[in-house]
Each structure stands twice: as structure tokens, then as C-alpha cells.
Image (tube, rainbow, N blue to C red; front, top):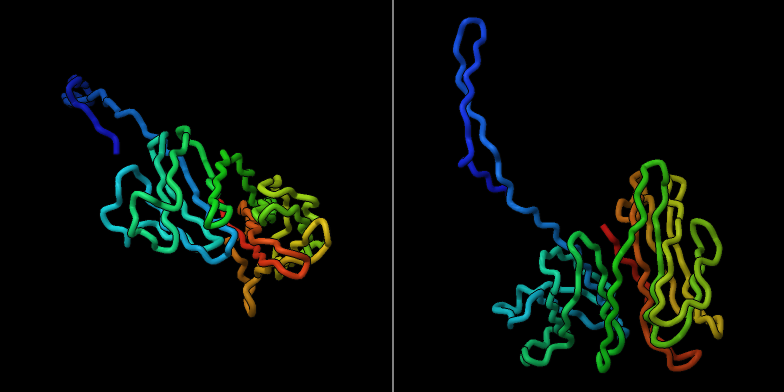
Length: 255
């Protein structure tokens, strides 16, 4: 909210139609604007079951049940005017040892910046990655979704193939922890579904499939979580051998 100061005011007297009109004009002093940073915390822990609780501060939370809850493969959006933002993360409601959280870090942000912070790795060895975003612009004349892929599938390169709406390879040999660029995927009214297949690059084994709808069944209504949006496909899981692995692909939106 702006603060106005009326300390510097002057009166003006105007002659109009033989009448005196008195008016007062004031110089408005505006408080310096605050441009917060946008921060998205992503839960990419590779067991595909761990939930996270995030606290945006350096002290201990007063009420743990009020912390931001982030499901496995999900995300939470936060705005802050603190450019040295402390983040404390607890796993699976484990708040009995507040001095020993799952993750405690300080993120260096910039005013007006947009950031995505990925929390990933195993429960025994958590890792983190911060990305300062340059999200693609939206155009109502361009019926697409801008989709990128991050490989958090433990230490294995992957391929991602688009099955619908346009069959073809999206990325190949995407290394562990690597983030692809944004790729345009059609999202017009002729597209009913989105379907993608994730494969192990070395063996060609299908790890998992991601499916979502574009047109809701029985309607002509489009899924607004995709149309014109930027999204990230999060590939997580662990590999033991060709027949022994756990993998999942989910998407988060950048709004």
C-alpha cells in the first residue's frame, strides 16, 4: 500500500464564470515499492513417496501444522521480499527434532526474480538445485504449452518421447540433474490428450509414462493448467537393474 504525505500542499484560486473556486493540490510522497521474488519449491525426492514441509524462516516454526505441505512430485509457490531467504524443510512430518531438519538452506534471490528450487536425491542424501527462470512469453495466437524436462532419476540418462499429440523424440540422453530447454507442444482444440514415455537411455527400457488430458471428456473445455502455460516434467526414481527400478513422471506448472 502506498503512503501519502500531505505536508507539501498549496491552494489555487481560479476565476471561472465570475466565481472563485478554491482548490488544494498536494505533492504525494510514495513509499519505495517492494518487488518480491517468486520462489517455487519442488519435491523431487527419488523414493516417490516422501512428503515435505517447508518453513520460510531461520527460527523454529511456532505451529508445525501450518507449514507449507509439498506432496511427492509436487511444488509450492511462494513470494518473498527477502533476498537472503532462509528455507527449512522437514520430511514426512518429522518435526520432533527441529534442530535436525531434512534440509536447511539460504537462497540468494534478486528483486523481481523468478526462481525454482528443486529438492531431490535420496532421503539419506538430499540434494538441491536452484534455477533462475526465464520463462517463455505467452501468446494467445500460439495454442501451445511450453514443456521442459528435468532428469532426477538417480544417476541414469533418459530419453523422453512424445506419443500424443505429435509423436517424436523430445529429448535424448538427458543426463542426471540436467534440465532441458522449453519445447513447444500443441495444445489446441484438436488435441485430446498429452502422452509421453520416459525411457532409460542406455537400455531403451520404458521407465514410466505420463498422461494428461487437454479436452475434458464429454466437453469442449480445455485444460487451462496446460494451455499457454510453461510446465516442467519431473522424472524421479531409482535404478537397480534393467528389471528392477522405480520411476515416475509428473509435471508442475509455472504460473
